[in-house]
Length: 240
Ligand SMILES: C[S@@+](CC[C@H](N)C(=O)[O-])C[C@H]1O[C@@H](n2cnc3c(N)ncnc32)[C@H](O)[C@@H]1O
Image (cartoon, rainbow, N blue to C red; front, side, top):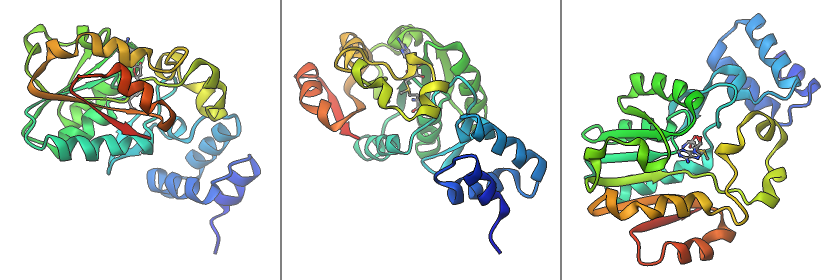
């Protein structure tokens, strides 16, 4: 028998009603009144992950909530490629950690590494701190590298960063639920979308260890420009 939750989600405009119903059941079980509250939240345009307070990312579950960037499946490739490129990494940094999803996934995959997560947004860091307590990494507030303990300079084996990279003219193409409920700070990348990458590259060589690398993700159409700004640097660009 079809789950009536699917019909309720569809009635409030959810296109992927089956998938959303399955996720609601996974998190809430048979608690129908809690499920009703999530359906109402979806009807008012709140992203499912914000309504549930949780997101699946790279095989783990992380806490996330209103006003904080929701981890995206497309960024999971950063985890795969980073782990493949530097399985021996011992000092790992997640720049622009948001709720800490990338740091959490890396701490899970590379348990011998020490993982540091940094972000400028204190609200995001409240969620990152909860995920840090669960997955074992530390959380630091500040502007890109400046957030990190100074003693890490020259020691970072692996920096992973899912940076804001949406060009100004394309911000309105972000799906409405997310555009309304995630901060500009988490998505806006300036005119060509690469301002955050440029900012991170300024001090990259000071922070990386001799064989350290930065693994970051840009949109397909940004690859050439990102290669140009990353010229002669130790940067692995991932398309997504
Ligand atoms: C695209 S989101 C990625 C969040 C997280 N890594 C994830 O994958 O879910 C980019 C993040 O960069 C952070 N950010 C933006 N500007 C920053 C800055 N100057 N210094 C540190 N973090 C910054 C935002 O607050 C946001 O959490």
